[in-house]
Image 1 (spheres, one colour):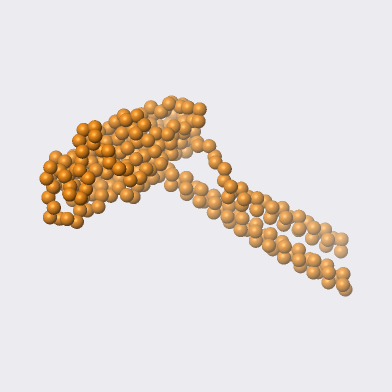
Image 2 (cartoon, one colour; image 1 turned 45 degrees about the vertical axis):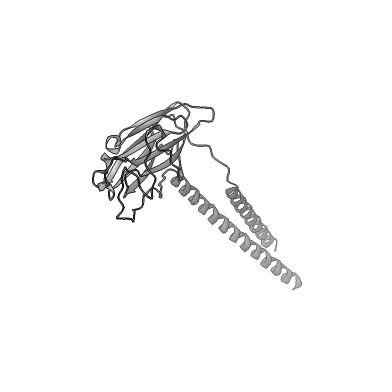
Length: 265
């Protein structure tokens, strides 16, 4: 009787251990699935960047007039090579590679005043094994009061100072500009660009309530030169895989042990 009680107690103990291990197995499995979904969504976000801070808010001082193109509460548009040297609010990091050869960024401006300027910086990380052309174009998708005729865009390489384009959106719309990227041992090229969108000081106040939306597109016409970025280590994923593997093996061993004991009885 004592032997039976002891055997039953030990069997119950092993069952509880199996239950705990199965719970760990399920939790680690769910964690791995969630980790996979998170990593996939993160990769998707990197391939499509939308800047949320590029809407110029409406000026609430309705009675203010602007002479010589200077705004009383906004930056004045400078001229010449000294122009467009305004503080940059944020930088968008864009990665282009074999599985993601292009990126589209939505840009929207409204209620601009003569002399207003909006500056954005982009950091392009292009993974390639051969010399390749990096392309950019801007396409107007929506506008009022033909704002594209007076609103200008300037794209400058921060690394070299080269101006890729400096023209009104009416001329830049759909225009394709490019820059050659030379391959290197790391098979990745980092390039920084500054995009200035500005309303010239000579423009009248009739455009102050106008709006325009455009798509800024960076892309590679891949001919097989692009490569995928190297995989990085994932400590959290490794821990989850370790827990999953240990739990699975432990459950299997305990089940085999219980089966053997039953056969011996």
